[in-house]
Image (cartoon, rainbow, N blue to C red):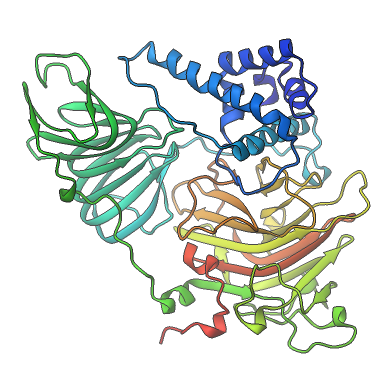
Length: 557
């Protein structure tokens, strides 16, 4: 979506709404925009679930107006969509709390402003936009969890976190969870044959599947040999036999059944099955059966990963804790801590001089330092940067998943026109690829940003000065398929989940990059001051959200 896709007054009306300067006629105009323009609705809904723990400065007297917008948009949109389908019960319940309305409003305004920012050519670091060389391939889901899985067919998933293209998959054994980009989850129990058709559709040829609906998502279509199932705020299970006969068991919500013409019962009208009901569907025959939730795997069985494995998956770590604290403390040497590095923090990729920066030995951005060796963070300002080389480089020419986490805090100070950005980035030493990078950071305007060689992605809501944020990045590397990058910014009040989130703050488009990134860089703009702490790079989500000191973790023999 670009600024040209939006109604001409949309930005202005959102700004006036946040500033409590919107008249009643203008408020009605904004409502009509949201109802009539999919692009405006997309801007409104895209960030409902992004970092709702980030506080905003919006005035509380706008909450009722935002609630009114939500009721009008969600109610009328569902009514419009229902015209082309059989009538179904409207989803009920207030989807969003008052605090969520605050985050949504700020997100929408900041998003619009950022789009204008891009369209005017004022791009991060002052450079003109780089022509995108992305590939529009159908990544539609993620393999989020797997237990004792054995895959058949060609090009099976290799590891949790892997992005999935539209294709046929065969799970011979085990239990796996697919999380679609629409928000819907499918839990498969082997043996199951399934084809991933799109972010809102899958086809089950045989096997056992449990669908967990996502209230903010469009209807998800699950196609079986006998009928099509459409979720309505649903959790349901289906079993498909080799002969095509199908069972449907509704655990929560409702399911709309659309018989396949010429296959199922003579009655071709759509039917609604509600919670507590089950049905066997065969050729020309429907039969009500007993609900049997115990015959399904509703979730992937919980397993606690061995800490030796988690430690092995950790590629590099730095607490920025000085080995010796001297006076004045800010001059203590923070450059040699951690594991997984070839050298100390230095001033440049080819400059061996120690990096400039101030040590804060007694301060940590982490909520609680588990080990005394985790106390300490580093401060960079006034255009300073720090480089360090990895013992194990980040390779995008192979099939792999990499995760990155670090704490970052932007310090308040005298505001200037710009150059207040700060970031972490992967860099390459290859002179031919020197312009390539993967970057996670904060813009001068306080927006989280993700950047690669082809794309700049920044999203609202803006972050606050003088507050620590926990940044998590994900890099999906592929030998023969596109690569993709994600960023999630967590506030200090948010709980870090035990598995990767459904919604990321920023996500790149799929693109191709076969570079090897051997170095990382920390950087603060000429007018910016930033604190960095607890940097982790690993091969699994667990390895970068486990806050233990690696020295206290058991190592694999």
